[in-house]
Image 1 (cartoon, one colour):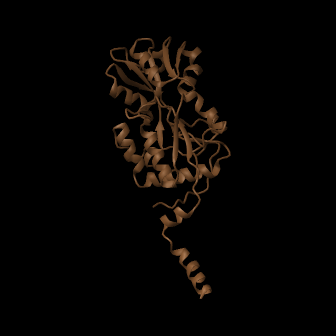
Image 2 (cartoon, helix red, strand yellow):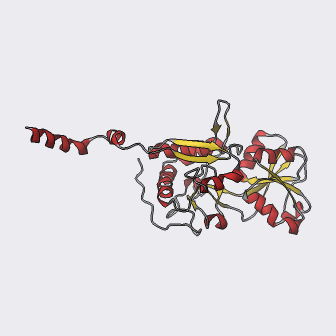
Image 3 (cartoon, rainbow, N blue to C red):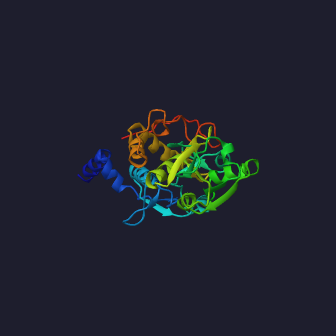
Length: 284
């Protein structure tokens, strides 16, 4: 009789529901990530406390689908990558422009947004039509970003003066106050700031500056990068990323936008750290 009961108990195990099996599995530690909490509408303070924005909604949903809790810290962008490399975070929830230099040191997800370098100017000031219109100008930027790098790289050629801030909000305010000719940032942030600040206008987009906006991981975190990217691929396929984009940026992305494109392999194609292994996620 005891043998029959034991056999029946083991036979029943495969028929446990997925929820029951998940509850019986050992709990995994929370995922730890960080954002620049002054980078609206990607991440910015909520009236109820904490941070809100596109990145917050995106990665809370990623963690939920992975069956993991998510801990999100808010800090200055310039310190995020060093803190992750020191082991404080598993990855960054912040949108990070994928450059070749960064990709040589970090692992990135494929882009879930395109980013382009765009200038914001004070309403009533002379529009920028070409880079030559910037000659001799003071340009405000957020510290530690590709925008600061662009200003520094073109400093001598165009006689630019960088005005560097720890937050994008302060960099935009410098333009409104007349302390800078223009503010250089990502296109989504410039357009969002313009929609909220009547004295700030979205202006010139640098030609050829379109890049992936992805999330970085430490170089050795290949398994976690793959897990997160599989979930992002599912969220692109079922329209979740596009719906979040429309909610926070105001426009429904078209089929040629990164929110709707599942790129082959893992990571941005043609960048260091790219893994050409075909994605084959199981999407619920």
